[in-house]
Image (cartoon, rainbow, N blue to C red):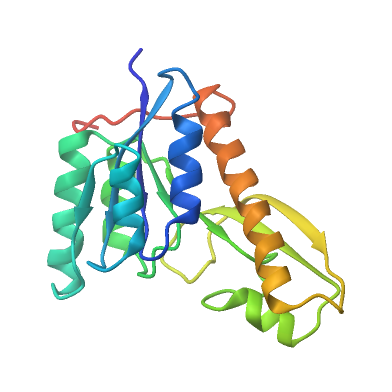
Length: 205
């Protein structure tokens, strides 16, 4: 059986993307990161991916939504991608996009995201800073399937962190990002081991 093919979508620095790429390189061919795609030409993730030997694509936001997403779908079809991992991708995917991707996979949802809060708390941007401002006693990280909403898809896995009120915002960010990296790389490995069912790309489905 061929390796699982994963695409990473990212808009920012790429720390989660880098962790996923490095993890995939330890999985002995069971899974491959086919490419990293960004919607921002200046996103540092593109350089990081290239330095790790992973192909990159840039599909900028200047396109209208329909054409933007169709361009991405064309790339996904070309590479016969099985899973999409969002890693700081700052653009909501439309229902039409998600339905088309699911059609290639037996109607299964195989688009996932990682979010730095215990959803449904603190969806959207700046989740860590908002939790810090509220001085919550604990927060955490959520891996979830992606739907049309803002961090509203079905939860796959969550882990909580207890947080000291004396810690700085930078401390919080470091702890939460470290947890993100561990959880996302573990989920990637679970795919390679068949612990999460995969429907391989099949355009005729």
